Length: 281
Image (tube, rainbow, N blue to C red):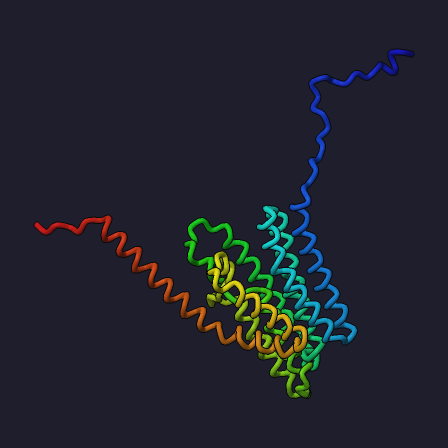
């Protein structure tokens, strides 16, 4: 009977079971901020279904704010990771692609039935394509450093907040009639095209790394005043911000072309100094 159940002796050379290492909190904190932004985006969709467009828009604005700080928190804590980058892209698609499209459809585009739904789909898909292109460009080793000052096309948060401009105007008392639905449709389609376009826009990621000492106190005052105005007059501030951003688009494109021409001249000058001119015989 002992031969039927021989004693089991583990092999001494067998590898020990793998133990997962503890993850530092600095790696988790930025992802928690991103997940909170996703919760706000999904909540905005629910509020839009219930016809509560004002809190839905506020949720999108709050999600944009969290999206703006999660990456900075990750870099500050040295907690950047590939997982966080992928999670951030998925969150941007939900918050700035799906949620604004459904809000705009419930607000105005549904008046145009299938045509309005098609434009809502175009907006959401345009945002997905824009995010995919952004992720692909991050892995380009040949991209010049100065191009980090510019985005290719309208960035996702700016596209979402700008697309909601008709709702800001409606909250300020602009009457919404059935004739306004085609205007909203055309405006949404234009924003979708800007999102997937190759129009260079200001990035702002490399700005503010060093602030002159004499500007510190004035900047504090300006930030406090801007925050107070935003809290007191939120939708007026959003109208000004959206309109101002649209005005800066051609300025950013012109600045990009100027920088590109300058770099071409510098490269040509450098090559001329290194490569001697051919000698005529």
